[in-house]
Structure formats: structure tokens, C-alpha cells
Length: 230
Image (cartoon, rainbow, N blue to C red; front, side, top):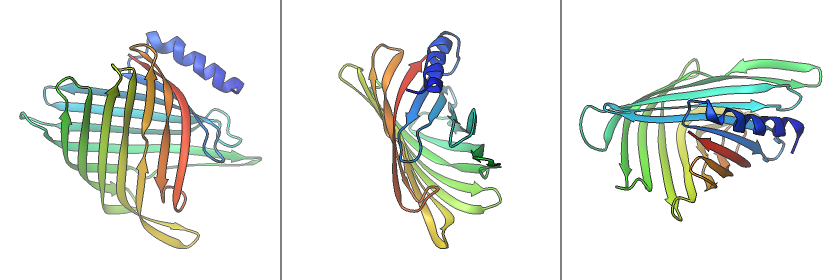
């Protein structure tokens, strides 16, 4: 483990008593050509009119970049004024990144993404498992005003809640070009597997599965990580 990784891991444990998010994750990315850290702050909160979800991802030390090299966030609201599994869904995604390779450097942003649609959710009576399916209109500011996204989210607790299998899968329309070769569809999924040492602390990781996301074709990016739940 690098010195930076050790410092950030210690920081996760220090802030565990004061952070307000539902969970805080720290991952070491072992994907080919990667080898950097990602922190995730994540919250899900239901209420009498639906639920609110957000996460904030930050990458650290990509290439020769010192400190935060990417900051990306998503906030989503499910709206329901009735009993049942159906709800309206509104969402926003956006972020920035910077890079440095030797003496060359630069920065840019991701296109703002706006979503609207419907979702269907089901949970077991004991909340040991559940899933959500979403069908969404998607607008990428300055790139693609008319698009769609299909999303599935799941959780499954096993072995008396000692093991948790969670994750999501997205499939959407977005026009991209890689070395002059055009693609129209992107798939991304991040299944996570956690061993819960206690009710609040877990060890595990995830595998990011991409198709035509940033590079053409399939790509697998495994991580190892720790998670503190509040």
C-alpha cells in the first residue's frame, strides 16, 4: 500500500464518528493502467414522499496529478404521493477532472446530465433484498439533448447479514467516436461484494464493468476497499 493510500485509509476511520453520510467508501483501483484511490460518499434517505439519493466520487493521484484528479456527483429524487412501488424519478449528474503527464496538464468537465422518468421498486418484508428499475429520458448538455437510460439497482444481504451484494447497471444512448469509429450505446455496471466485520465496518470491493465507456469495447476494473456505514 502506498503512503497516500495508508493516510487516506486512516482518515476514513478518523472521520467515522463525525461524518453525516450514510456510508463512506475508500477503494484502491487495480484496473490496467490505473492504480489510484477513489473515495465515495453515499446517502440514501426515504421519506413520506419518496426518497433522496446522492453520491460523490473523487479520484486521487491519477497519472502525475497530485491530490484530487476527478470529482463527480449524482443526486436523484424519487417522488411518490401514493402507496405502491411506482414513483417519478428526477436526477442530475456532473463533474470535473484534471490531468498531468510530466510537464503537460489540463482540465475539463463532464457534460451536465439531466434525467426524468419513472421507477419501480420492490423490497423484501425484512429488507434482506430488493431492487429498483428505472426508465429515464436523458439530456447531455451541449452533446445530446434527446437520449434515454435504463437503470437497475439491487441489494442482497446473505449469511445473517455478514455478506452484502449490491450494485447497479446502466445502459444508455450516447454518440461517441473512438479513433474515427462511432458507437451509439454505453453500458456500465458496478457490482460490489462486502464482508461486514461489524454493523458499521465492511471490507470488500467492486468490479466496474464498462462497454464503450471512455474507451471502445469491454473493460473490467476491479477494486479492493473498505466501507464505514453511519
